[in-house]
Length: 367
Ligand code: G3P
Ligand code: MG
Image (cartoon, rainbow, N blue to C red; front, side):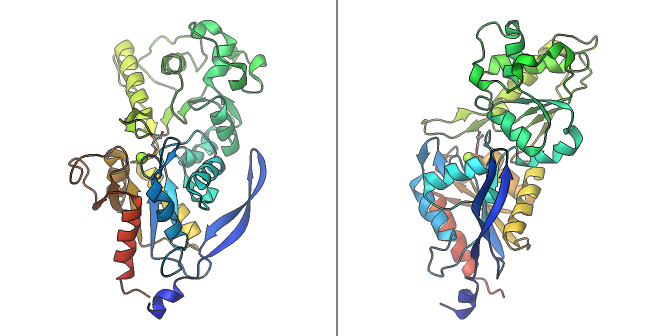
C-alpha cells in the first residue's frame, strides 16, 4: 500500500446538530476534515440500494466500503440522490441507515423535493397546495422547508366532500387547522407535487380545480381556461420505478402525463409546469453543492452516479458531465448497455460499481 494512499485516509466523522420540524436532533455528520477526496459518489436509492421494504444485499457492503471499510481504511464522500421523497431528509437517512445497517447522515440525502427549497423565497407567505405522499407527511416537509401557508388536498376534500364524492379523507391525514379552513376565501398561489399521489383521480380533480379557477379559489372557474396563471411544480418525472414487485411500478411522471392529458382534452392547450429531480440539472447542481460541503468545501473533480433508471439516473448524470454507472438490480434489465441513454459503465449491482470505481481511482496518480 503506497504511503500516498494512506495519507488520504484521514476522513473523520463529527457530530452536528440540526433543527427540524420535529425538534433538535444530533447526528454524526459525514465530513472529510483533513484531506478532501478527488472523487465522490451519488447513489440512487430505489432499485440500487433497496427495493420497497427489501434491502439489496450488495448495498450494505458497498456503503460500508465507502464509510472506510476497505483495504486503505479511507472514507469516500457520497450522497443518496433519489427521486423518492414524501418524508424529511432526516427520516430518509434513518430509514436507509436502518435498512443497510450503516451510518448515513441527513446531510447526505438529496430527495426529489430537496431542491424545491429554492422556491421558499418566492412562495413563503403564499397559499401553496402541496400534493402527494402519505397522510399529511408532505405538509410537514413543506412547513419544515419554510413554506408558511401549506394546503393539502385532504383539507380541501374535508371542506366539501362533494369535491370527490366517492370517499372521505381520514381525520389523521388532515392538517391541524383543517376544520377552520374555508377554501371559498383562500386563493391558492401555486401547486407543488412533492410525492406520488395516493388517490390519482381525486388529486387530478383538485389540481384541475385550482388550475382552472378564478385566482386560485377552488369552486370558481375562470372564463378562459386556456390561459394558465397558477404555476405547477413536480418533484420528479419518473414514468416507472422499482420496488420488490417483479415488474416496475408507475411513478409521478405517469401521474403528470395523466393530468396533462385531461387538461389538454378539456382546454385544447398544453399544461405548463416545472419539474425537479433527476434528470434535471437543478437537482444535479444541488447535489454537487452538498457533495462539496461534505467534502470539506471542495467540489470533487469526478462524480460517479450509480442508478437503475436510464431515463432519470443515466441521462441526468451524462448531461451534467458526471460519470454514470447503470446497475441491473432495478428498472433496467436488458442485456448490454441502455440503447436510449448509454451509461459510462454497466455493472451487475452497486457493490461491483463501487469496486470498479475505487480500482479506477486508486490507479490515478494525484496528489
Ligand atoms: O418515487 C421514487 C422513485 O420514483 C424513484 O426513486 O431512488 O430510484 O430515484 P429512485
Ligand atoms: Mg432508482
